[in-house]
Length: 86
Image (tube, rainbow, N blue to C red; front, side, top):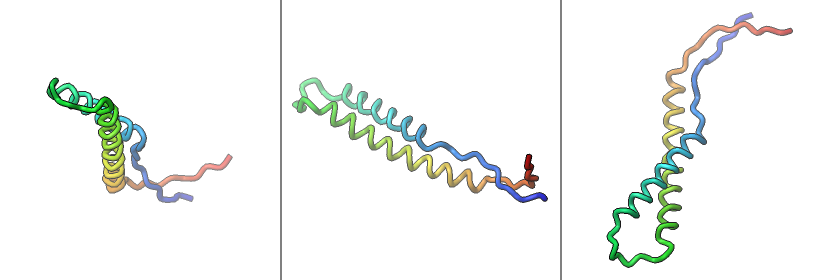
C-alpha cells in the first residue's frame, strides 16, 4: 500500500549558528584592529567585544537557519512510497 511522503532537505541549525558566531568573532578582531592606538579603552574591551559580536552572530545564524528551513519547507516535493516490512 503506497503512502504519500514529503521529501526535503532540512538544514542543521547548529552549523549555521557556529559559523555566524565565528564570523562575529572575526568582525570583533577586525574592529579591534581598526581602533586608534591612542584610544583610551579598558583592558577587557577585546573580550567584551568578542563576546558581544560572537553572541550577535550566534543569534543571526539561528535566524538565518530558521528562515532557510522555512524556505526549504515550501520547496518540498511529494512522492509515493511503499512500506516494506521484513
